[in-house]
Length: 624
Image (cartoon, rainbow, N blue to C red; front, side, top):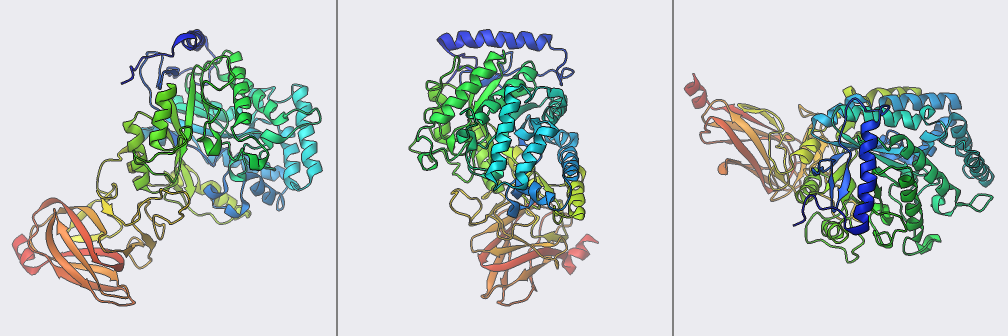
């Protein structure tokens, strides 16, 4: 066991104490902080734990507000456009630049608002990770220069000219020179204020770094792969790295006394830094830049937690461990993992101890290096995977930031944005701005339950007998507790099999399809032998019932059996057929009160729409 208040040993401890006392003093003296009216305790590292000023452990569990200050195509349903600059390029073909900028101002004002943050707080989350694009910290003139590249990104002269402009602005001290006038600062200040009012922390995440930290344009919105690591200016400087350092220096100057900011996520998801792409095989480039960034922030007397992200989308730390970083102090570092499409079992392990997305590696890394670890992103899977992941992390005292708060027409986000058409039409843009507002989003209650009550089974809807039960309104809970499906989560990033064949209504392994003929518009489909669904029901009138099941048979005869509180109450044989049909069974006397109804698949059935319980004549007479 590790003592909760254990601090770092030796010189690291002394360095930490000196810097941390400065942070405490600065926090007490600060009068212009964006959240000065709502004080949160500053966080620091104490061995492998994150603690507040009193030594109390604080485990950050929250949400990413992605898709807002950096658009990602799949979040908005514009996958063919691939990245934010390509979305913007397409918009520029149909409207003047001033109108494009106006749209982006409106989009950023409406996609995430105080209402979204208040909602996260009501769910019990205690932090927000804020993904940022570096162009938010450019002036309108500087952003216009980048837009000129967006108009013609295949023209190397334009990109070279933009880089030279950046170099000139850098040398003249014109980059990030007047923070209060920059869009990025205004958004950070607003989010910090909203979060602090809810006693929530903020993680600042440089999601799209200057030049781009990898090859995936959707993530880092770059023109050429890996330019952050490769692009030299006319003076031979890795100018994008110099700009990144200056950006964090400006942020440190402004926020060093802001306790509502939990940590700085220095660079999101660097990836594909390898020999095949002309870089080293052991993360030397990452080590060099992280070491610069850490020392630069500390030189500003900023002792915030600093999170480093490994190669391979934030997970691989060869040459990046605390003993390898070339920094004056390794105090208050946090190591990140991004967990997607991987096993959640304790026995799953990677032979590389510096690859830490699997639970066993993550824990071993934390314990070996005595540093806090935090899962900055996790999600984009089924509720079953979500619940297993957060249970595994919660049990081990590891915090996490779930990805992502909103997506268009998706059950995987906490909030579902209704389809809006095309972002390239005035009508589509107007619909997107309207649909993305919190009041117009659908709350995916099943996602919220998987994250906040992962071990529980609870009713999805109020279901009463006599009455009609929609097949899709089975209980909330994990596979094996609320339902069983043969494939309920992706645990291999190479396997693209969807967990929900149909992808509608809910985000479990249960396969659900849109079905206009059903009262709620949906039906369960592809019910395989051995699968089952449970429903929390209230029997208002005791007695025997006739049960009608609305089914779409398969090519062969199927069979469903019903149980109540584990006792059999009837079996329905479903004849083979190509059209919807209704089959009937009769139950024995059912007792009044709340019960668990289970529908068990004994032979495959194509679709199940609803179950209708009607009292038999005997039950009706008894009731009278």
